[in-house]
Every structure is written in structure tokens, then in C-alpha cells.
Image (cartoon, rainbow, N blue to C red; front, side, top):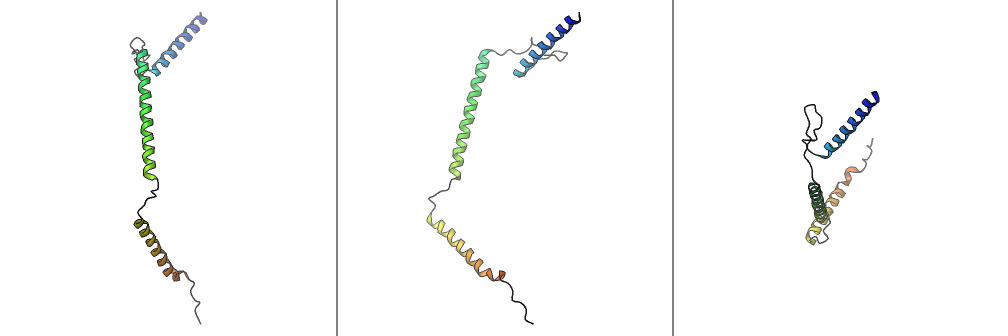
Length: 119
């Protein structure tokens, strides 16, 4: 008698595990008043629905891939050095840098050691 009860309990556990597995695959889970999964009220997903969901997932993946490719392309365009800078702009930068170097050279005296006091 105990063996039959154990076998029935094992079968019940296996059925509950199968129900739980099916519930994990489905977004909507219908439960009875005890909190157990109710298979009779569960929505049934047809093969056509599964195929349609797979196509939608592939389409969304392709759209995301194209969006990322476009973002990478725009990033490369926006962040590459532009070799055709106007010569006037480059000359202005060079002149500014020369002026800064000259100003530093003029201020170099501040870093020379002081003469020792004569006494």
C-alpha cells in the first residue's frame, strides 16, 4: 500500500513539474483556487503562433542589428579625424601654440634658483 502511495506521489510530482515547465514557456498562467496550475483554462499556443513568434523575433533581431550597424557607421563618421581641415584653422592653432611656448619661455625666470644672500 505504501509503495502505491509513493508511486502516486511520484506521478503527481512529475505531472506538476511538467505543468510548471509548460507554464514557464507561456506568458499567462491560469491557476485554480489552490494555487495549482490549471491546464484546462490555460491558453493554447498553436504551431502557427509559434512560427509567427519566431519570425517576429528574427525580424526584431535583424532590425536591432541594422540599427547597431548604422550607429557604428555614424560613430566612425563622426569620430574619425578629418584630413581636409582648412589650412587657416591649422595655422591659427600653430600660432596659438607658438604664443603659449613664448609665454612659458618668458616666465622661465620664475623657476631659476635664487642667488644666495651676500652677507
